[in-house]
Length: 620
Image (tube, rainbow, N blue to C red; front, side, top):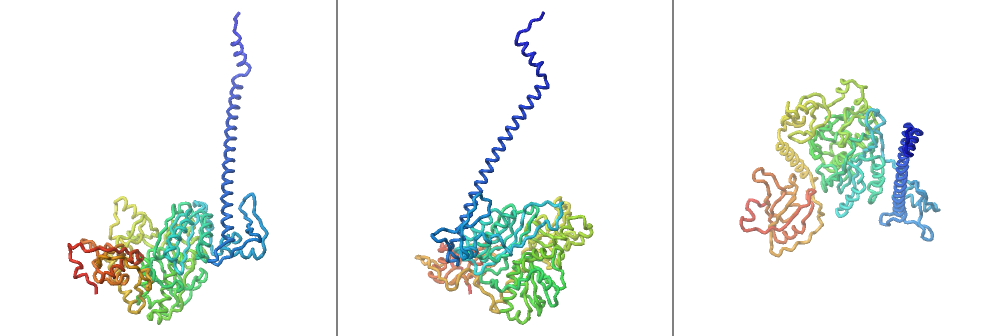
């Protein structure tokens, strides 16, 4: 007979009662219970975070409401606004539909209601905006293309009179703050804004609404053009602020710029479309030639391509005899990508129609421009209308056809032969049809973007066939430009002839600096009677003797500082003044803006080593 101890019996008995399956079930239940506890803790933590976030958002919204209420009710008399309050000093509390648990309400009279609705920041009419033109990239697109909540905003606004210099830096900071959550480019000048921006639809909308009531209301009538639902790769990664002298560089800065109120009659796309089919009409493409290569209007009216590499060439082209004959007794239409380049271009033509005898007798029938540019025309005519090819853009789209055609080009609805037939330009290397500016390659002589096909670019990168200096843009080939120095000399001669022509007519204003003729400067102490000065930070390209002497009176000698080997001008010079008083007055002008750059002026007494002033440096 076998005897067992009590512990052994207990263990054996327990195992017999439960069995291996029951043990597994118990372990599974314990594991499941642990998981449930873990999920419960996560849910509890998430609720706390959401509650905290909602509370924070609620506080932010409440602060924003107070700020808006304060702005809408009590505003400065200086800007012509009205301050209103209740009897007994209680301020009006506007009902806000912002999702807050407590909504603030108050009884107001009809007069109070009218006054508050006129306040710029009032939420009563804050979200209505007839000049905000929206379109969606999904309207004509297909589901195969990636889309996201990316919205593109295009707009510009000229300001007249220009912002004062003392306020310009502050305005620059404020505008940068408004767009801090966006990406893209802002060209900011004293004459206004020119912007290409991307962000979410809410971010873009909020920016537009805030800008509407910025400063003194300069953007009340601005037309904002929004394109929604773009692919995420078309969003700019950051915001770049570019302080400039001109929103569009026509070389018409400051006093040389014609007043913007001279600009042509703005036509909406439908009316412009009708004009394109009228007799005795010429259409000026105000864009650069490389943009016109890949797409342009193809209408019954005659299309004029000025064949410009940059906008500074437009005034010279407009003054040519061949151009004048093209415009004689015609109505003139202008267009560009977004509308801004037409503003100064049409203003210049109309200004010359009033003041230039040679333009007056041409009997031009009228000057019109496409409101909102090609971008807005595509929104009105998604099938293209009179447009042929693609529209070159300065955003992440690079170039695009009218919406309906663009969808076909990216689908199987068109054969490859049909897609090739729709291309208007050619590869500069091999000559096959091509209309994509890729690879960051530029013309080696003039620097404009190059049209190089994919095969030629790959051959260049792999070394099979390098793209040498002989591969140039079609404009350089046509004009037989083979070097940068040749192009610079050509541009310099054309500009000189143009300015001489204007001077003969009494139209050229030489005071290209921000100095009023009546403005006086305090003389800087000059106890040693120094007459030699050192000047730096001058415009290397456009500064000459005439402009410098116009900016600073009393100069008798000029020695330009340049590289001895290459002759390149450093933007610096030594000058001799007629008297010590003239020198003191000039140093007092230190920092004056000449050709859009601050000119730095300082005393530099002769060191006695060299003869000063050199006899061959006298100016006539």
